[in-house]
Amino acid sequence: MNEHILIVEDEEELCLILGDRLRSQGYEIDVAFDGKSGFEKINEAPCDLVILDIMLPLRSGLDLCVDIRRAGFQTPILILTALSQSVEKVAGLKLGADDYLTKPFDTMELMARAEALLRRGSPNRSMNPEAQQVYRLGPIVMDTRRSRVSRDGEQLNLTWREYKLFRYLVEHRGIAVSREELLKEVWGYAAGTLTRTVDMHIASLRQKMEAQPKKPEMIITVPLFGYKLQM
Image (cartoon, rainbow, N blue to C red; front, side, top):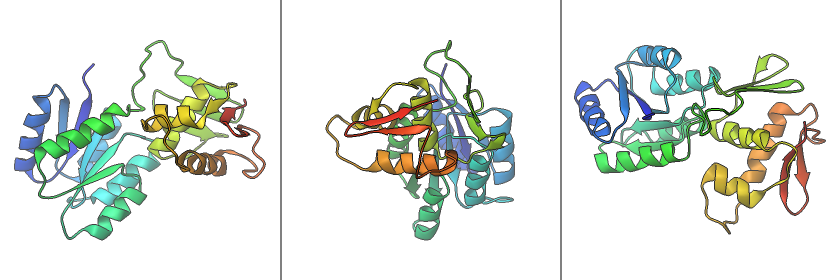
């Protein structure tokens, strides 16, 4: 199945150019010209990537970014900003966007960034069609069909990366997973990369999931190795 990309951009000519270029690479493309209709399209048919302009009529790109994450969609978001929008650029990343591109941009660069986000794997799609779709782990429920995680019936607002990390642990629950493996499978980093990013994301997951984050009973640290989901 070809990846489905939604372009939310009010410049119709730019939408036409990007749409044609992406279709020529085999992607399925849908477009929306304002923030309100963009969110409606995401709800109607979850996609694999959103290319989102910040300056939009009816609802801004930043507001739409918040709406997408609050609705539980972990779809990668590539935001488009003007040169003067450095503050909005940072805000977009903090609100859940995964990458940004400054206008005017080269379409080849946009293609490369889009491919990089898609290559990391969209949580809306499963590599294995026989994979379990709903995991019930005590008070935690993960619905991979809708890319949503809840605790005691209340939806958790996870970032796309937190969702991917937790899903990987869920699919390997009961097994100790090394930091190196998590960096490779969730982040796409090469072997031997030294970073604290796994530990920081685990800490964030514990804050959102554990009853006592400082005394975790679900995501357990395996000393000098990595982590294990114990459910």
